[in-house]
Length: 321
Image (tube, rainbow, N blue to C red; front, side, top):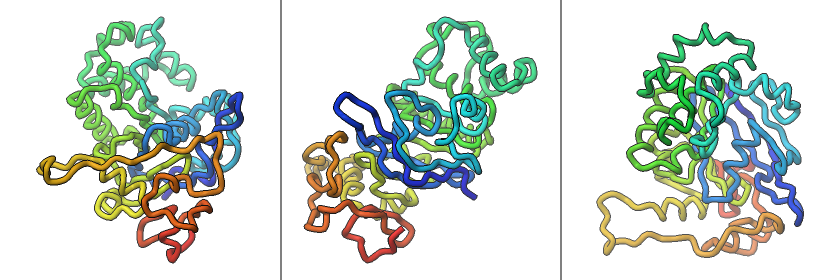
């Protein structure tokens, strides 16, 4: 069963110089109970995709496509209707979640406001709230504190609790480890894993630029490049047999345990991503791809190769999705 179905979604940014095609015709699904990892370098559109499903604000503009959570198309909802679904059906832990809390309100008031918005009483959630604070090793005394009185890691974990307090069908986690040290990253990942295991959310989208984190938590992975899907597959398939040249380059840039520097050197990806204001008809990875050929002058569709989906003309013999 699929919790989320995204079809040819287009989310652009309106600028003085035209439309920046941050997410340009992306299609994918999230199954019930699974964790879908979304990875790619900065500017590939992964954060825009996550935000666009939950909270679209100018200059972001929806320019086409659909995104169904169960039977509801998120793209056709006005702000009032979206507020009813947010936190209940779909929720997000935003990038830089440490700064997502209102600094002028105590934690208790922030939570009370959220529950009031969804016509629920704070008194009925107190026991549940205490239980979840205990899970993330926070004392309930923090409810009477302001966000500024908490450390970055504490605020990060608190936002995780607030985002899952109403047990959403789908939780989107957007780069939640990017501003944390390694030990805190481990704690946050373990907490998120435990939350999903305990049923705080049905399914999870985990957005990151760090493929090594996905190997610890994801069931499937979607690799994005310049607003497009490059490859989708099971995490083990992506790691063991990456198909798209970009996916291979990403994995090739990761250090491996037990391999010495003089034995093998890490490989970078030469060149730069394309200007999203000036997108031509060619494959967006063409100028950086070591395997580019004449056919790449045309943007490729998605081909299915065994259990993986890949947007590359090298796999033209596969079934077109």
